[in-house]
Image 1 (cartoon, rainbow, N blue to C red):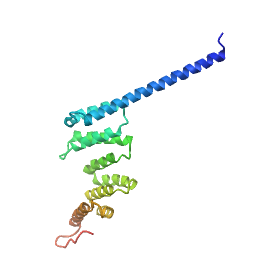
Image 2 (tube, one colour; image 1 turned 90 degrees about the vertical axis):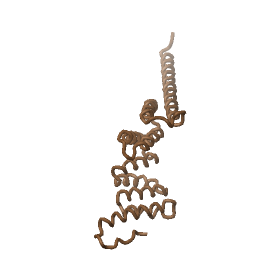
Image 3 (tube, helix red, strand yellow; image 1 turned 180 degrees about the vertical axis):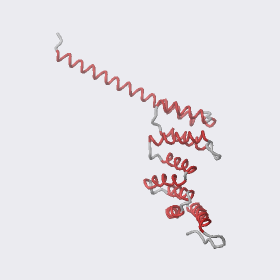
Image 4 (cartoon, rainbow, N blue to C red; image 1 turned 180 degrees about the horizontal axis):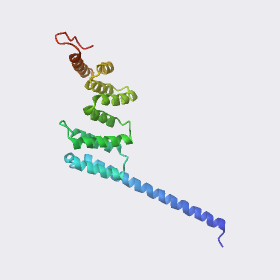
Length: 209
């Protein structure tokens, strides 16, 4: 006769074994899906014929990879960058929409991914330079000690005709490879500002040093 206690122990062991098998099975499936998605990504980006992929085919492969493993923000970034590269000018609505969608998806997975934050700033710049500057300023405050971050913020402030913001960022790019370009952008926005505020016939002066 089997004791009640013995049967209970065997039942617990069987349940534990079943749970372990289920966990192992889920792990194997997850690993297979991740590997398959990574293979799809690598084939699309580096495989033979990758350079000839049409955007629609690339988007289809991206969607297939995302269904398998929806946590690869690097794939999102690459697709978004490729779509943005093809989006113009002149602007092409389908390509821009694809860039925005995949950029947003990647940032859902990793809100601080540098390449995606740069891309979002560029996408915003075309529509609303001031919004782009605000968005990138938040990232620059978080990752402050990087010359390029300040150079890009200067560019965005200049695009938004924000003289004060551009001048403030110029201080952070002095002595870097971005200084000359930064000064040129400040001079341009300064001239645009002066053209609106100085009456005709009055000397416009020179931009700040």
